[in-house]
Length: 167
Length: 426
Ligand code: SF4
Image (cartoon, rainbow over all chains, first blue to last red; front, side):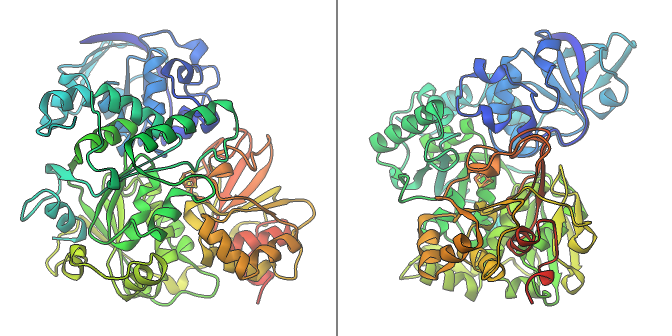
């Protein structure tokens, strides 16, 4: 899968409270959540971004609560992937579970600026900064997680592989 | 093996597990709340599941926006209630409930050696009783509800050793704030924080809950304590567990082996630690209270899954007894559960709070996540005993949240600005 989009840059410790503030958590429809994506870190984000765009951040992206509403809001508003130096644990898991692509790549973050156009090949982990003519390789996923990604998320993975009859 | 590895090995049917290994662990308790359950239920149906794996091991607690604050949150709570009743789950209705992480331990649902997963990041609180407990998202919880299993990467463990005796007014909250200030909000990313040392042996269970609760604020997967006499006393006299059954697999499982492996060992001398305050907008932005510059306040909140237990309210009442909340601020006290509320009532603490001019709320998460019962306006400052002070956490993105212990919060409510408790009490 190859994405192409413009970079929106953020700092370290972007937490789930600013990605989707709790005042919007009285609903859980992805389309509703998407309207408030990144509300408390950049209130203009949803008007500035176009579907396919890429969120780029420093360390510990998605720290804080376990609300799956955070990766859901990012996915539903059309962000194609998030590239960061590192991700918080629960956010990382949630994103993989719902099929929201994340890439860990310090070099890409170091060598890209807001507004740059990137091309990302999810299967190889290659990130091309078209604006600067540079390319980088993201940290590979562990085998086990690739299984979930290739299945199309945890629900499909479980349906396919669960040993148990959970009906 | 260390404590977490032992517990995870037992739940994987292996004699040993090692950090980095991917495992499928069986779970003993699966939790969700009025915000995360609706999504989990949707995914549960998408999975094609009909019944939860064991209705006695699946718990749902309405606590975040309850009593329902508006129509959409009422719809969410209703969806959860109907599912819980239909499936015969362990469900606590408003009025017999409380904040999940205060409620579950006192209901005897948390025991040493269990694996507990919850669609709430502060599920790690239960490590205080020697359980391996970790927060996840709704989809993971849906799978756990259906299969009774969860995939996990065995985390490395960092051992935190606390030496010495705590000074007056210094609590578990101050130790965990100090620790997060030292290692940072991703200082224990993907790891387990194992809390040990002679200061921990002295620490009451409520203080252990507070410390384990905030392990997630350092990015940790879990926080965990060894099981000792204090734990057993809690289980017996608070949680009302009459017989300590063998299924605790207890003492042996509840202690790390002598040759346990740790990714790192961090040691602190607690005798030099004074009450701490986290400044906006990260829990790691710590200053000792003596250097906090007397920040003036508009609101004080005492409660939450971090500090809404009876001993927290006792400390707050000790400082508020016979005094008045500063006329320029609101002080909101929230007992963590109906049981805590009732105990506080019997002990006369509620009267102390009301006489002092504080608001006493029914148990709810409420203001902790900017839900209701104390949302902040732009420019307002709040000192809170909760666990997060991110931008907009308690209301307007232009408001500020400071974190502290109940002692600092109560003393500051009287002073109208952040002060050391000794300025008010003796
Ligand atoms: S009290 Fe606050 S931190 Fe604890 S569960 Fe409720 S919202 Fe989360």
